[in-house]
Image (cartoon, rainbow, N blue to C red):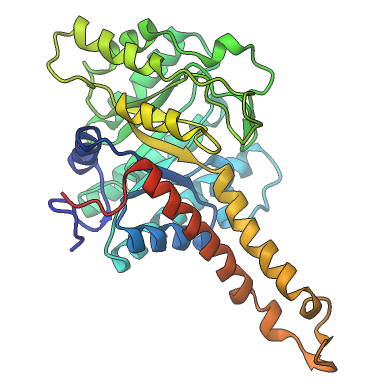
Length: 361
């Protein structure tokens, strides 16, 4: 059993997920959601979570899912099929390895645009079959990103999917307002700045529409969020949008709790620490990280190379002797471990910042 009271080890879902979100808002912490692309990145995240006592969200993007199984695809249908297979195989791996680490883990699929909805359709079908066999779904949560469409179309389609997910208590993450920048093939770098800030009335509309279907949803409301890391001053984050949205939903629905909504912070990499802390106060329970994790992975390898470059130029020959072998230096297990250690060091600082280190409840 994990050390998290009332939460089992392995992939959690349904009521367990919302218990975690409830406690996160009560104790003012957020969960780190890390995009993973292979077993190496998954193992890094789980080792960090085990070492520092955190509950983490492992998420697969469409492209990351394809990479997990190997990027051989040549056309649209092949892309869809490889993303489906990759996501399923990655999810099965997380199910098994999280039990080995004795950790509860949340398993999520990241941004799914309209053209890739067949990916989610296939995963939902597999979730249902998995539920019938194991009494739980393969994935905890799925995200549908229709933020580039008008509000009604966005919410109508999201409502359809939330209805499909209802019987299986799968969480739906949706986006209101757009996240700027570019990530995983989604390029919003040319959007006008006003598209990056969600109107609290739109959040109210979404809540009123979705809460009549299910409580299992989270909202990525934009407050200037941008994927990637940028020079200070180039991104203007306004988390007060989240506070105003919470207050509006509470007032219009006569709710007693201060933060009725479960918010998601997209584009968390490189964000100001004070902004992150304020967003958590306003009900953010999940913060997405990708760019900074990628950099920490590469930085670990790069620093290893700088330290050992004279042993990495050929299979034979180094400062010790021209016929001396270099195998122990270019062994992937050596430099990949440096990548893992670098990710773990970065996540330690993130768990401290998100206040989600050594969670016991």
